[in-house]
Length: 102
Image 1 (cartoon, rainbow, N blue to C red):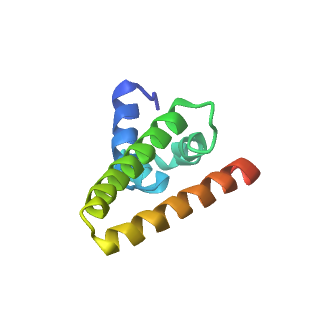
Image 2 (image 1 turned 60 degrees about the horizontal axis):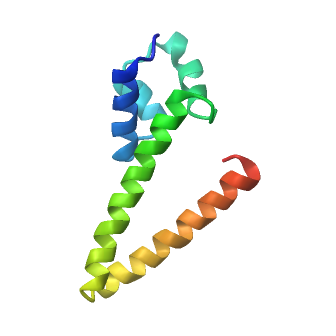
């Protein structure tokens, strides 16, 4: 399967709405014979698939954090709590990625 710019955009968009790599493979109808190699692309930072997916996930995180911050500024206690939890989770995920590559 050739991964062109249109597919990379779809990977980014699906990453932005929280789909997993396996879900993306299914939605893109990646043939079973090519699925393992396709999913491997998501684990290798030097690939365009990894880059597109990471960009989509980052966009989702950013947009969610912006909305929570706006609500928090208006005094929404639940938004303040959720934003703090998300920041801690994001820091933990960054540490895991730095230390263990996951």
